[in-house]
Amino acid sequence: MSLADLRGSLPEYAKDLRLNLDSVLTEGGAPGLTQKQIAVIALASAIASRYEPLTEAVAEEAAKHASAEELNGARAAAAIMGMNNVYYRFLHLVGDEEYSTLRAGLRMNVMANPGGDKIDFELASLAVSAINGCGKCLESHEKTLRKHGLSAQPIQSAVRIASVVHAVAVALEQAKAAG
Image (cartoon, rainbow, N blue to C red):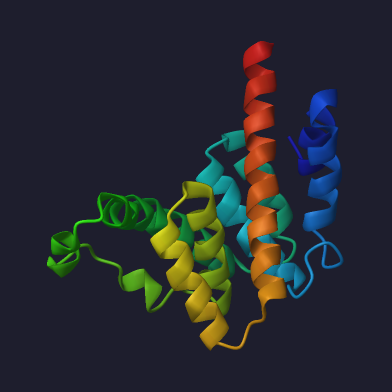
């Protein structure tokens, strides 16, 4: 099923999501981001949202704007943040500083060489961290993006993409379950 088909299958109560999806997946609706960055962020967000039909449709659309290597960078961001968001959210929520002194012992080599552009990987990691609710990772990726010269606008755009893609996944899954 294409992204247009999925968009059209959103129930009437999710009309705002349909309109927002049309918007945030364009450069005009995601200020500060290129179409390639939008594609990478959308794919990582769809993977993190865990609704396979949406992931497949977003991947098909993303392939029009990003190379296979860049799309694998999005997949890498979703994968590594799936691990990091759980671990670092634990550190944050437990609040016991002793855990921060312990070695994490988790391999994260992909963060140094994500296969695509480092900024795109950071934007995708930020988006996935927003979906997964990890404040520590959000803070870290936002600071890294700012150090690389990004303003608030493209960072906000990345999180807006994540929020809409995630909400679309939730609505589509609910509509499927309701029959």
